[in-house]
Structure formats: C-alpha cells, structure tokens
Length: 88
Image (cartoon, rainbow, N blue to C red; front, side):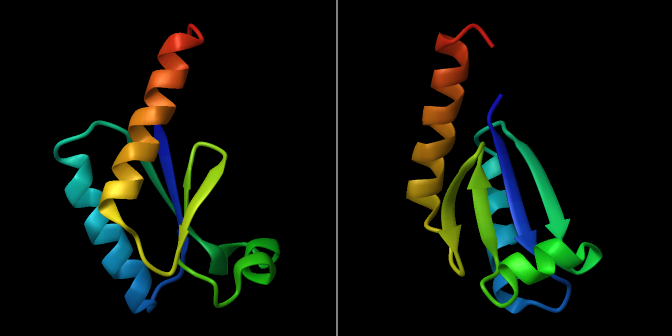
C-alpha cells in the first residue's frame, strides 16, 4: 500500500488545507497517511521551517505549500503499482 507523509505544524493554515485535501482523496483511494508535526523534532523544524506543508509519497517529495490532488493521486497510484510489481 502506498504511504503519504505530511510534514506540518499546528496553527499552519496551509497544512490544514493540504491535510483536508489528502484525507478527502483517501476516501476513494486507499493509502497510509501519517502527519508529522515538525515542532516535535528540532531537526525537522530546522529542515522544513516555513516550507510547510511538505508532502511525501513514499520517499519522493511531491508537494510543498499546496497539494494538487490530481498529481498526488497519480503519485500514489504509481507508488502502489511499483510496490505490487516488486513483490512488496
């Protein structure tokens, strides 16, 4: 199953909007979703700072600031297909 990770922070409006769009997509397309609050880790806070939200599908960064649901869906489908093809 594909995995999506959102790096964000509480109080971040763009993070809330991105998360809502991703949760909505999850209603029609199964994938694992993890939300990581960068404020809980000083290294993540230093790496991402104000670049949030940052969205990963698997190990690939696919978006910053705003999420394009069509692009995200394609990336999720591609990751799921590659995992199925590799025997995972």
